[in-house]
Image (cartoon, rainbow, N blue to C red; front, side, top):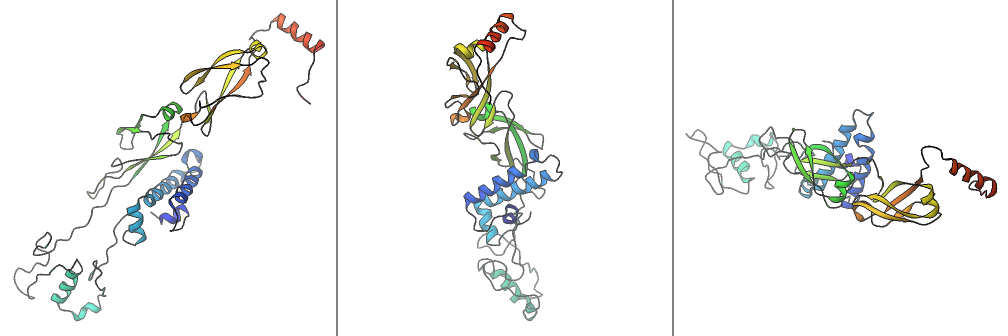
Length: 315
Protein backbone atom coordinates (compact mmCIF):
# COMPACT_ATOMS: atom_id res chain seq x y z
CA UNK A 1 0.00 0.00 0.00
CA UNK A 2 1.10 3.59 -0.62
CA UNK A 3 1.78 5.93 2.27
CA UNK A 4 -1.60 5.95 4.10
CA UNK A 5 -1.28 9.65 4.94
CA UNK A 6 -0.90 10.44 1.22
CA UNK A 7 -3.82 8.20 0.30
CA UNK A 8 -6.13 10.15 2.63
CA UNK A 9 -4.48 13.51 1.89
CA UNK A 10 -3.72 14.31 5.54
CA UNK A 11 -0.60 15.22 7.50
CA UNK A 12 1.13 12.94 9.99
CA UNK A 13 -0.12 15.13 12.85
CA UNK A 14 -3.78 14.73 11.84
CA UNK A 15 -6.23 14.29 14.73
CA UNK A 16 -8.66 11.36 14.98
CA UNK A 17 -11.58 13.71 14.26
CA UNK A 18 -9.98 15.21 11.13
CA UNK A 19 -8.85 11.75 10.01
CA UNK A 20 -12.41 10.47 10.20
CA UNK A 21 -13.74 13.52 8.35
CA UNK A 22 -11.17 13.09 5.56
CA UNK A 23 -12.04 9.41 5.20
CA UNK A 24 -15.78 10.00 5.05
CA UNK A 25 -15.36 12.64 2.37
CA UNK A 26 -13.16 10.40 0.20
CA UNK A 27 -15.24 7.26 0.80
CA UNK A 28 -18.42 9.06 -0.26
CA UNK A 29 -16.81 10.50 -3.39
CA UNK A 30 -15.15 7.22 -4.42
CA UNK A 31 -17.79 4.67 -3.44
CA UNK A 32 -18.23 2.07 -6.26
CA UNK A 33 -21.99 2.59 -6.25
CA UNK A 34 -21.46 6.26 -7.10
CA UNK A 35 -18.80 5.57 -9.75
CA UNK A 36 -20.15 2.60 -11.69
CA UNK A 37 -18.55 3.80 -14.92
CA UNK A 38 -15.08 3.85 -13.37
CA UNK A 39 -13.44 0.38 -13.56
CA UNK A 40 -10.91 1.42 -10.89
CA UNK A 41 -13.52 2.66 -8.40
CA UNK A 42 -13.44 -0.54 -6.34
CA UNK A 43 -9.65 -0.41 -6.15
CA UNK A 44 -9.65 3.27 -5.10
CA UNK A 45 -12.29 2.66 -2.46
CA UNK A 46 -10.42 -0.37 -1.09
CA UNK A 47 -7.17 1.63 -0.86
CA UNK A 48 -8.91 4.48 0.99
CA UNK A 49 -10.54 2.07 3.43
CA UNK A 50 -7.29 0.18 4.01
CA UNK A 51 -5.42 3.42 4.71
CA UNK A 52 -8.08 4.54 7.20
CA UNK A 53 -8.08 1.15 8.97
CA UNK A 54 -4.29 1.30 9.18
CA UNK A 55 -4.15 4.80 10.71
CA UNK A 56 -6.99 4.16 13.18
CA UNK A 57 -5.03 1.23 14.60
CA UNK A 58 -2.96 3.10 17.23
CA UNK A 59 -0.30 0.38 17.46
CA UNK A 60 0.23 0.20 13.70
CA UNK A 61 0.20 3.98 13.30
CA UNK A 62 2.76 4.40 16.07
CA UNK A 63 5.04 1.70 14.65
CA UNK A 64 4.74 3.20 11.16
CA UNK A 65 5.55 6.72 12.38
CA UNK A 66 8.61 5.36 14.19
CA UNK A 67 9.76 3.59 11.02
CA UNK A 68 9.38 0.12 12.53
CA UNK A 69 6.95 -1.17 9.88
CA UNK A 70 6.04 -0.23 6.33
CA UNK A 71 2.58 0.68 5.00
CA UNK A 72 1.73 -3.03 4.59
CA UNK A 73 2.52 -3.70 8.25
CA UNK A 74 5.72 -5.60 7.41
CA UNK A 75 8.50 -5.14 10.03
CA UNK A 76 11.64 -3.29 8.93
CA UNK A 77 14.80 -5.02 10.17
CA UNK A 78 17.98 -3.08 10.96
CA UNK A 79 20.21 -5.54 9.14
CA UNK A 80 23.47 -7.28 10.03
CA UNK A 81 25.52 -6.52 12.05
CA UNK A 82 24.22 -4.54 15.05
CA UNK A 83 20.46 -4.89 14.28
CA UNK A 84 18.12 -4.01 17.15
CA UNK A 85 18.93 -3.13 20.75
CA UNK A 86 20.42 0.21 19.72
CA UNK A 87 23.79 -1.33 18.78
CA UNK A 88 26.20 0.49 16.50
CA UNK A 89 25.62 -0.17 12.79
CA UNK A 90 28.61 -0.92 10.63
CA UNK A 91 28.90 -1.47 6.92
CA UNK A 92 30.22 -4.67 5.38
CA UNK A 93 33.49 -2.88 4.53
CA UNK A 94 33.99 -1.88 8.17
CA UNK A 95 33.37 -5.47 9.30
CA UNK A 96 36.48 -6.65 7.43
CA UNK A 97 38.78 -5.84 10.37
CA UNK A 98 36.87 -8.09 12.81
CA UNK A 99 37.48 -11.73 13.51
CA UNK A 100 34.57 -14.14 13.18
CA UNK A 101 34.29 -14.19 16.95
CA UNK A 102 34.19 -10.37 17.14
CA UNK A 103 31.47 -10.18 14.48
CA UNK A 104 29.40 -12.82 16.26
CA UNK A 105 29.70 -10.99 19.57
CA UNK A 106 28.67 -7.73 17.86
CA UNK A 107 25.69 -9.50 16.34
CA UNK A 108 24.65 -11.18 19.59
CA UNK A 109 25.01 -8.00 21.68
CA UNK A 110 22.31 -6.37 19.57
CA UNK A 111 19.66 -8.69 21.07
CA UNK A 112 19.38 -7.30 24.58
CA UNK A 113 23.00 -7.95 25.50
CA UNK A 114 22.55 -11.72 25.58
CA UNK A 115 25.83 -13.54 26.26
CA UNK A 116 27.25 -15.05 23.07
CA UNK A 117 28.66 -18.47 23.67
CA UNK A 118 31.12 -19.27 20.94
CA UNK A 119 34.17 -21.45 20.32
CA UNK A 120 37.35 -20.69 18.50
CA UNK A 121 37.31 -20.83 14.72
CA UNK A 122 37.75 -24.39 13.61
CA UNK A 123 36.42 -25.94 16.82
CA UNK A 124 34.02 -28.81 16.24
CA UNK A 125 30.33 -28.30 16.92
CA UNK A 126 30.35 -24.53 16.38
CA UNK A 127 26.71 -23.47 16.10
CA UNK A 128 26.08 -19.80 17.01
CA UNK A 129 22.30 -20.25 16.72
CA UNK A 130 21.97 -23.43 18.79
CA UNK A 131 19.59 -23.39 21.75
CA UNK A 132 16.58 -21.19 22.54
CA UNK A 133 14.76 -19.48 25.34
CA UNK A 134 15.45 -16.58 27.65
CA UNK A 135 18.93 -16.83 29.13
CA UNK A 136 19.58 -20.06 27.24
CA UNK A 137 22.91 -21.20 25.81
CA UNK A 138 22.25 -19.72 22.40
CA UNK A 139 19.86 -17.71 20.24
CA UNK A 140 17.09 -18.72 17.91
CA UNK A 141 15.86 -16.04 15.49
CA UNK A 142 12.12 -15.88 15.02
CA UNK A 143 10.22 -13.55 12.77
CA UNK A 144 6.52 -12.73 13.06
CA UNK A 145 4.39 -14.30 10.35
CA UNK A 146 2.69 -11.85 8.00
CA UNK A 147 -1.04 -11.34 8.46
CA UNK A 148 -3.49 -12.11 5.66
CA UNK A 149 -5.07 -9.28 3.65
CA UNK A 150 -8.27 -7.57 4.77
CA UNK A 151 -11.39 -8.22 2.69
CA UNK A 152 -13.64 -5.24 1.85
CA UNK A 153 -17.36 -6.04 1.59
CA UNK A 154 -20.53 -3.94 1.19
CA UNK A 155 -23.51 -4.85 3.37
CA UNK A 156 -26.95 -3.81 2.07
CA UNK A 157 -29.17 -2.86 5.02
CA UNK A 158 -32.87 -2.01 4.91
CA UNK A 159 -34.14 1.05 6.76
CA UNK A 160 -36.15 -1.25 9.02
CA UNK A 161 -33.02 -3.21 10.04
CA UNK A 162 -31.01 -0.02 10.50
CA UNK A 163 -33.79 1.41 12.67
CA UNK A 164 -34.40 -1.66 14.83
CA UNK A 165 -30.80 -2.94 14.96
CA UNK A 166 -30.01 -6.61 15.42
CA UNK A 167 -28.02 -8.86 13.08
CA UNK A 168 -27.99 -9.04 9.29
CA UNK A 169 -26.63 -12.01 7.29
CA UNK A 170 -23.69 -11.36 4.97
CA UNK A 171 -21.95 -13.60 2.45
CA UNK A 172 -18.19 -13.04 2.49
CA UNK A 173 -15.89 -13.36 -0.57
CA UNK A 174 -14.93 -16.80 0.81
CA UNK A 175 -18.62 -17.77 0.34
CA UNK A 176 -19.01 -18.07 4.09
CA UNK A 177 -22.20 -16.59 5.55
CA UNK A 178 -21.90 -14.67 8.83
CA UNK A 179 -24.34 -12.63 10.90
CA UNK A 180 -23.20 -9.01 11.27
CA UNK A 181 -24.31 -7.27 14.47
CA UNK A 182 -25.31 -3.73 13.54
CA UNK A 183 -24.02 -0.96 15.83
CA UNK A 184 -26.57 1.12 17.72
CA UNK A 185 -27.94 3.87 15.45
CA UNK A 186 -25.85 2.65 12.53
CA UNK A 187 -25.16 5.21 9.79
CA UNK A 188 -25.03 4.88 6.01
CA UNK A 189 -21.37 4.38 5.01
CA UNK A 190 -20.29 3.28 8.50
CA UNK A 191 -17.70 0.50 8.63
CA UNK A 192 -17.68 -2.62 10.79
CA UNK A 193 -14.55 -4.73 11.32
CA UNK A 194 -14.98 -8.52 11.56
CA UNK A 195 -11.84 -9.89 13.17
CA UNK A 196 -10.25 -12.84 11.39
CA UNK A 197 -12.86 -13.02 8.60
CA UNK A 198 -10.57 -11.76 5.85
CA UNK A 199 -8.06 -13.53 3.60
CA UNK A 200 -6.09 -16.45 5.03
CA UNK A 201 -2.36 -15.71 5.34
CA UNK A 202 -0.26 -17.74 2.85
CA UNK A 203 2.66 -17.46 5.29
CA UNK A 204 0.96 -19.09 8.23
CA UNK A 205 0.06 -15.88 10.09
CA UNK A 206 -3.37 -14.91 11.36
CA UNK A 207 -6.13 -14.26 8.86
CA UNK A 208 -6.96 -10.71 7.84
CA UNK A 209 -10.17 -8.94 8.84
CA UNK A 210 -13.36 -8.28 6.90
CA UNK A 211 -14.04 -4.54 6.57
CA UNK A 212 -17.81 -4.25 6.09
CA UNK A 213 -19.24 -0.98 4.72
CA UNK A 214 -22.93 -0.42 5.50
CA UNK A 215 -25.06 0.75 2.56
CA UNK A 216 -28.69 1.69 3.17
CA UNK A 217 -31.06 0.21 0.59
CA UNK A 218 -33.51 2.40 -1.32
CA UNK A 219 -36.92 2.10 0.30
CA UNK A 220 -40.15 1.64 -1.62
CA UNK A 221 -42.16 3.89 0.72
CA UNK A 222 -39.84 6.25 2.56
CA UNK A 223 -37.38 8.85 1.29
CA UNK A 224 -34.50 9.52 3.68
CA UNK A 225 -33.21 13.02 4.42
CA UNK A 226 -30.52 12.42 7.06
CA UNK A 227 -32.39 11.12 10.10
CA UNK A 228 -35.72 12.50 8.78
CA UNK A 229 -38.06 10.44 6.63
CA UNK A 230 -40.62 11.58 4.05
CA UNK A 231 -43.65 9.67 2.86
CA UNK A 232 -46.52 10.36 0.45
CA UNK A 233 -50.02 9.91 1.94
CA UNK A 234 -52.99 9.77 -0.45
CA UNK A 235 -56.24 11.39 0.77
CA UNK A 236 -59.67 11.96 -0.74
CA UNK A 237 -61.04 15.34 -1.76
CA UNK A 238 -63.61 15.33 1.03
CA UNK A 239 -60.88 14.51 3.63
CA UNK A 240 -58.94 17.54 2.44
CA UNK A 241 -62.04 19.74 2.75
CA UNK A 242 -63.67 18.30 5.87
CA UNK A 243 -60.64 16.93 7.73
CA UNK A 244 -60.46 13.54 9.43
CA UNK A 245 -58.02 10.87 10.60
CA UNK A 246 -55.77 8.76 8.35
CA UNK A 247 -53.24 5.99 8.99
CA UNK A 248 -49.63 6.77 8.06
CA UNK A 249 -46.85 4.16 7.72
CA UNK A 250 -43.74 4.51 9.92
CA UNK A 251 -40.71 2.30 10.63
CA UNK A 252 -42.44 1.22 13.87
CA UNK A 253 -45.78 0.40 12.22
CA UNK A 254 -48.67 2.64 11.22
CA UNK A 255 -49.58 5.77 13.17
CA UNK A 256 -52.71 7.91 13.19
CA UNK A 257 -52.55 11.40 11.69
CA UNK A 258 -55.25 14.03 12.25
CA UNK A 259 -56.12 16.17 9.23
CA UNK A 260 -57.52 19.63 9.96
CA UNK A 261 -60.37 20.86 7.78
CA UNK A 262 -59.40 22.71 4.59
CA UNK A 263 -55.89 21.28 4.74
CA UNK A 264 -53.41 22.81 2.33
CA UNK A 265 -51.60 19.89 0.69
CA UNK A 266 -48.67 22.09 -0.32
CA UNK A 267 -47.27 21.63 3.19
CA UNK A 268 -46.16 18.36 4.80
CA UNK A 269 -47.44 17.35 8.22
CA UNK A 270 -44.79 16.34 10.78
CA UNK A 271 -44.87 13.33 13.08
CA UNK A 272 -42.21 14.14 15.68
CA UNK A 273 -39.72 11.40 16.60
CA UNK A 274 -40.96 9.00 13.91
CA UNK A 275 -37.84 9.25 11.76
CA UNK A 276 -34.78 7.01 11.66
CA UNK A 277 -33.52 5.86 15.11
CA UNK A 278 -36.22 8.13 16.61
CA UNK A 279 -33.64 10.89 16.17
CA UNK A 280 -35.48 12.44 13.21
CA UNK A 281 -39.08 13.18 12.27
CA UNK A 282 -41.49 11.81 9.68
CA UNK A 283 -42.94 14.28 7.16
CA UNK A 284 -46.21 13.25 5.48
CA UNK A 285 -46.85 14.87 2.11
CA UNK A 286 -50.57 14.78 1.34
CA UNK A 287 -51.73 13.89 -2.17
CA UNK A 288 -55.39 14.39 -3.11
CA UNK A 289 -56.64 11.47 -5.20
CA UNK A 290 -59.89 11.86 -7.19
CA UNK A 291 -62.21 8.97 -8.12
CA UNK A 292 -60.82 6.84 -10.94
CA UNK A 293 -63.95 7.43 -12.98
CA UNK A 294 -65.58 10.80 -13.46
CA UNK A 295 -68.55 11.67 -11.23
CA UNK A 296 -71.36 13.90 -12.63
CA UNK A 297 -72.21 15.38 -9.22
CA UNK A 298 -68.60 16.24 -8.51
CA UNK A 299 -68.20 17.78 -11.94
CA UNK A 300 -71.37 19.85 -11.43
CA UNK A 301 -70.11 21.08 -8.07
CA UNK A 302 -66.76 22.05 -9.54
CA UNK A 303 -68.44 24.00 -12.35
CA UNK A 304 -70.48 25.85 -9.73
CA UNK A 305 -67.31 26.69 -7.81
CA UNK A 306 -65.55 27.82 -10.94
CA UNK A 307 -68.40 30.06 -12.07
CA UNK A 308 -69.78 31.30 -8.75
CA UNK A 309 -66.86 31.05 -6.25
CA UNK A 310 -63.61 31.29 -8.15
CA UNK A 311 -60.30 31.78 -6.24
CA UNK A 312 -56.65 32.13 -7.28
CA UNK A 313 -53.87 29.71 -6.47
CA UNK A 314 -51.37 31.03 -9.05
CA UNK A 315 -50.17 34.49 -9.96
